[in-house]
Amino acid sequence: IIQDFFMRGEVLKPGQPLSISLAKKIAKLYDVRLTFEEAEPKEQVVIENPLEELKRKFEELYKDKDKLVPRPPVVTVMGHVDHGKTTLLDYIRKTRIAEKEEGGITQSIGAYQVEVDGKKITFIDTPGHEVFTEMRARGAQATDIVVLVVAADDGVMPQTIEAYNHAKSANVPIIVAINKIDKPNANVELTKQDLVTKLNLIPEEWGGDTIVVPISARNGTNVDTLLEMILLVAEMQDIRCIPDEPVRAVTIETKLDKGYGPVANAIVKDGVLKVGDYVVAGKSYGKVKALIDDKGRRIKEATPSTPVMIVGFEELPDPHSIIYVVESKEKAVEIVEKVKELEARELRKKRQIKLEEILKKMQEEDRKEVKLILKADTVGSLQALQNAIAKMRTKEIDIDIVHAGVGAINTSDVMLASASEAIILGFRVKADNQAAKTAESEGVQIKTYTIIYKLLEELKAALEGMLEPEE
Ligand code: GDP
Image (cartoon, rainbow, N blue to C red; front, side, top):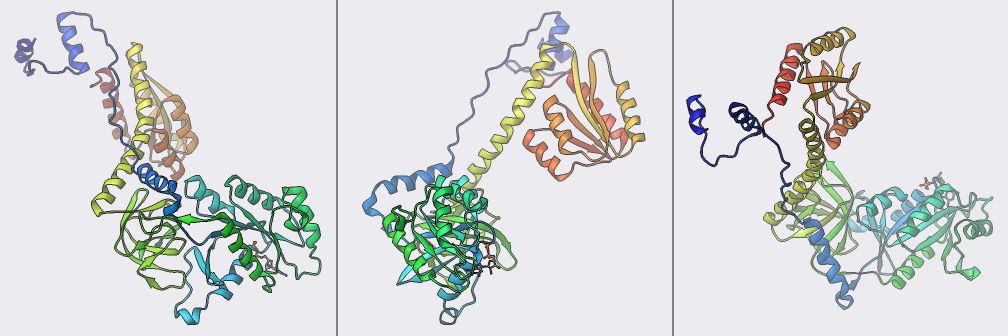
């Protein structure tokens, strides 16, 4: 064989693996029958998710309760729209943060910290349960106590119930603030009854175990009592953390700051975060260049439960990710690369399935088939394309146009392609944003052209490739 091929101008080496097309060529030449067997799928090297590894380290340390130290509680304010969440957060912030003394300008960093009787409380500044649940979904539970605001003139409303369910499923203790008691039509007793009948929350004064504080967020009535109750619940909960290191923080929000670049607003959960630390957050890493607190001051380090803006990420970190301090830049890069590789694998896995399926079908059936979805800018060009493509059909290769239409490639085209294992060809049209995203996640191939012969040429080449598939 080697000799024969040499004479034909092709060099083969002993022991050389043959591609499918070459094997077919040889079989044909010597008139032997060729059968194919499916190869064992290659084992992929297992990469452990480095973030899981980091997480486990903390879980281990949490088992040793004696080494943990108390930290201030982190509070989220939830409730129905217009029941006064923002007003309450603003009132607490305004009255408890003495800006003049601090000499800074209040900075909105997603959370703030106040002091009550020498003890600290951190409030997440975004009211509502969306952020709360989003963070939880990503395993970044940041809240220790929920303040459920219920307006005394409105009672328990749909979003009150929703918020309550979110808090309950997260197993976070709830303090109810019955708000707007200054209003003439406020009815605290009726609201309490509502709590019992609609949420099964029985106030302490009625023999239950739910702390209920009637307040006026606008006038500040009883807000101090509410804060004291938060401290009381915090004490009962015995909220603790790892004192110095390892360090991790929970991201509340991320943004591209005009001056600082990519920043993460976060609350430190364990350990002490310091300027100069190397950090990873999902697929992003960085070296902490600056830490800015809720009073707009640059600080050198942030202790547990401190809200802080972290400056120094190379890229925008994933929102709601957990930020870990690692020992070096090399380690940070290594982790981030692994995380990226794992994500890419997930995507590839989807693609492989599709490709494998198509290849398998092609081997099983003698007849080969290409499925296409055609999109073009005008009816005229679409027809021209359809005609030209129809001429490419041969005995061996069938071309099935699953769908042809005028206009941009949209999500429904992509889903159709995904379901029917088709390739999408666009002539003088592009995929809209959503369709492009879906195509990526579904592993659907989209090719767009502006010149008709280019399209036909490439299609022809692809069809010939199918006749003699390379390994
Ligand atoms: P959120 O949607 O829950 O954040 O509600 P807001 O804080 O925006 O409040 C909705 C409206 O209720 C605003 O007009 C507030 O001024 C008003 N409000 C909030 N708290 C009180 C209160 O204690 N008393 C009175 N009378 N009005 C209040």
